[in-house]
Image (cartoon, rainbow, N blue to C red; front, side):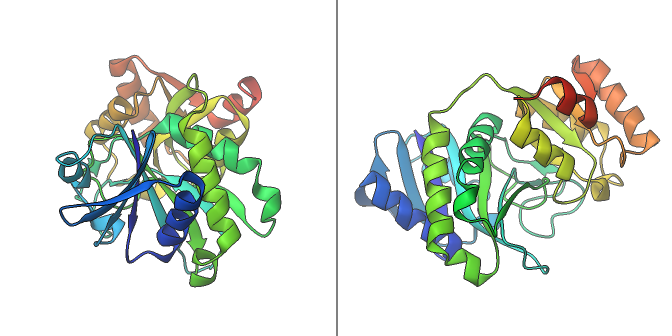
Length: 276
């Protein structure tokens, strides 16, 4: 089963939840302190805490129900107030300023992320003021062993309450769960927080991503965390944003790639050779 988790404190998550309930007509029940909605292969759970602080939530919930993957339905906040749909995996490199632990990564679900992005892409014309962007790995919860990702609406209360935006996310989640599975999986390195080159790759090629590490993490990026990202992403490739990846980090990437027998690709060659 695929489990959508939302926080009672999160307006966007609640908005998405209501649309999922509308589409799925699930059974509702209480299990201990949790409200759970279940319909066929999709479940929905509300939790009290903010999602970024929900470390080990999969272990807690697996004592009550069985599931194989988590979709965190969430808000996205930013100072620039951009109107976006975003997707990313959770975890931290050097510090843990927003939940989770330092040098700790949640296990990604790159296949569902890819199917979600392609489903969302077909619906963007319904909200032309919104754009889609992939985000890099940057906040908690990091202690999640079940494959997971964040599916977000940003970036202010106006967007979090937007009914059509939440409806698009809910529709795309449902479609993603039963989508195609034969995508190429990579770990991304380089670029800014909103990873423009990786975003293009997600939208327009046969590649998807597990973890992504922005240039601002390079000071803390090391062999152990990069190797862990490749392992738990089940990646066969590392894709670098060649314009922003330093020679030191390229050396680290080549060292890890050789050890783990994964291929290193530049983002520009991926866009040329692996288009949809």
